[in-house]
Structure formats: structure tokens, C-alpha cells
Length: 137
Image (cartoon, rainbow, N blue to C red; front, side):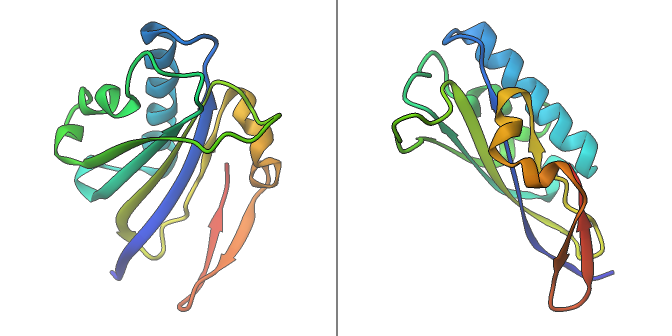
């Protein structure tokens, strides 16, 4: 089986800037990521979380590190660039993982963040150098 480094994107929104609300949204997002992609923490190389400037109650990486086996994944939290009129209270991630080239990637956009990538709500075909890989949200 051939493996390669792959990238998975995702995002969600939070009802309010509180530890509890952020924890609920990040947990839901990461649960969906693992379920849809059959992803194991030991396959992950790194995770970058970005948050909009209106979220500062807790770091998403701190929430992720409390998950089983996630404490050994390299993680970084950054503030998303502010663009006037952009989606408020939004948490995004970019995960790099070693996965089989035949594995479909399913990007995860939840809650109000689903409107960020409506094109990923339908099946897509991505061309790789070796084969065609289908992705679905």
C-alpha cells in the first residue's frame, strides 16, 4: 500500500466565547474528523488551528491535547486574519497526516462554517499524480 502526506481541512463555529462553547465545538469537529476519515492520531504529522479574533477563552489545541493519543501530535494555534464581514466565532483546522493514497479525504465543515465551502457539500474528484481520489463532506 502506498502512503503519502495528505492535508485535511475543516471548520466550525461557536455560539459564544466561553471555554464550554469552544470545547463543545472543537470536540464535535474532531469527532467528525476522526469518524469521517478513519483517522488515527498516530497518523497525524501536525495540526494548525486558527480562530477568529473574537475567540480567546481557550486554545483549541489545549482541547485537542486532552483527547486520547493527541498529546503527541504537533499542534499550533494562530489567530485568523480579520476580514470585515467574515464569519464570526469561527475555528478552522489544517491537518497533515500520513495516509494511504487510496483513502478518500473528507473535509469537515460544521455549523455555520458549512457555508464557507458549499462546494464540499457534494462529492468531488481530486486528481492526484497516481490516481483519482474522491472526497466528500
